[in-house]
Image (tube, rainbow, N blue to C red):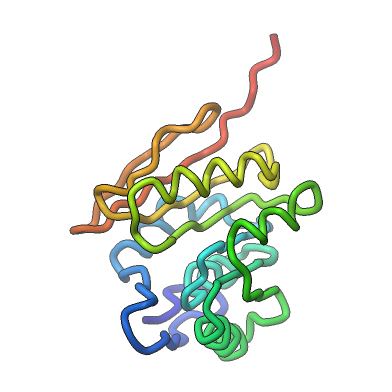
Length: 185
């Protein structure tokens, strides 16, 4: 696992031992960033289930402004910090050991993000619950992009005021949502 391109290009990343963290595959990561590559510059990133931090760090390497990366595992948070330091992207990161609901509760009305990565443990309905929490917390910019990774059973439902494109990489499904600008009436 490595940073594909940008200022940290080629930097190898560490992952926690065991099966609790499931890093995004190279093929899926390449496709995700091909789909959003022209929309990264100066965006604030939220990676709500950080794991290794690789998605937020890749976004920073490619020109995103800053990133908040959260995970509930202290081991994962330690690895994310190590990866952020190793890529020299730590100054642009805020890394927290937090449960997603608690983070959203604290961020409500205080933070705005233009790019959100969601790669929670695979479970039917979890992404729908997280997306509803994000919308409730009002933390998205008007042009926000949300990238959700799941298995077939966990593909999230369409969202009002967002377009959704679904990509498949073997057993991995990636939904990319883009906020639609509201038309003046």
